Image (cartoon, rainbow, N blue to C red; front, side, top):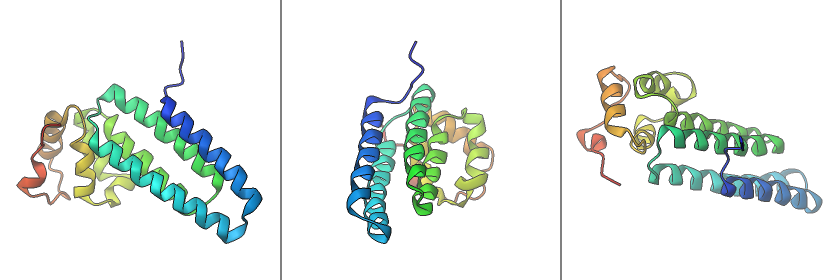
Length: 159
């Protein structure tokens, strides 16, 4: 049984990042190396966020997402660039939105790192849950106070 739940795409990207960093380390140093790595990893971060928003993700799919995001964070941590570590840790926390049961979602959104992120930004990931209608009911029924969402924000367009 294969317990490596990362997708092949994730494995390829992680291998690429390690290899790229190894080559760049030979050619660049100091701030130049850091700036190039930051540029590449910030763009990847944006692409991952957009992919998560466009997908419909079930709780079992959330486990795969979590494993992928954990692998990305491991690679990023190896670069020892605090800005990237913070960004990818946030990404890993966003991935937890797809893991928790609907009745626990409100607590996740209101505590820790996610509590500091924009509510409308987070809601776009809640909408990507396969069980969005139930998750929405649980979050709103629990009085998600910091959410100042308009009715338009709460409408889930079928994907």
